[in-house]
Image (cartoon, rainbow, N blue to C red):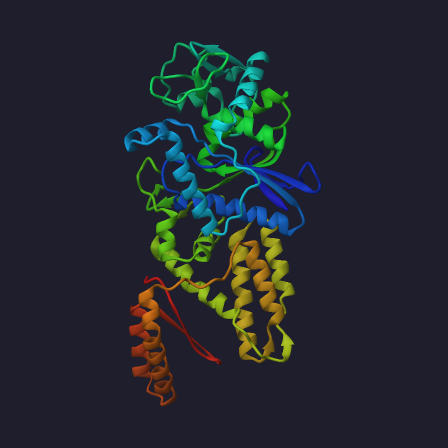
Length: 457
């Protein structure tokens, strides 16, 4: 398998340090608002990577953190009149509900920054002892000039960082790009005792402490969105390698492209979010996963209801391929499809090609059924490969109004069938078009006409 390594800037053959187990750390959310589809894109990508690695025989130890102390959490809690802990617990619950709904497998560990304070303090103390960090007026800063290759992940020099950044003058810093490891306490904010005075951890150090604690000194894969390359992951790699003595922190760095709404990146600060809960009111989890996986993980993806609805409609062809058949002819050949699927996934997790293989297999199954072939092997392979992509092929749960309308739709479909038999195609097409306007899609086959609700386009 080849994966694109952000660190080297090229495709590399994936070889984990341990031949049997892959250690994977993925940066998690800061839980101060509802989980949105931008989050979902990233976690679907890394869930699919994990599923494929497990499919090929690896055991994957997956760790994902929660940043549960942060300026935004503090501000939101104060605005809402609740404690930081209550706010965090609410939105961690929201996160798990969203991820479970999208069939995203749980990580082995979900460490939280506030529960890892002793390990964070140990990491900071170790960096100070080694000359890579220094205390100043209750804060502790990482000394970026102490690492010769600082900037290697984002492929930037210190001079270019300074030129391209808005940096507040801080007389306590030795260098403008030095970053905080420990923030001195401020009135009204949560704090913990430390050798440098009461305070709380900086954003970057928590991931170093957690990955060291739960995965050891070297990871195989470190993942996250492209917006984390700098400064978060750049600072993580610097402080981690300085702490461990320059051992490579992660063998492979993988970053997914960002989800856009219109021409802008979807983000909490811009206020242009679509929550996972709202999206799943309209579309099935399978449709959401396929929407994300139909674009290569390193590319940006524009989100729209129209795009998700189109994927939802296309899924009906795949679901139809899994309906029972009774053909006794030769089997639909699935071996070629499995080989093509594997080749796509081995090529830097090329899920768009893998999804195309899935639809090709569904087409061949549907054709084979109409031709009287045996489709059992094809259907088994379709489910097997679909599971690698995290698909369940479950139908959309119908609302009470949709269930009430079902008998009338059945009647209209029956009337349309009789009209077609009588060659009254204009009237038959009128029924089909009217049903489509109401969000009901018809699919004709040798076995008859199937109908499904769809989201209106």
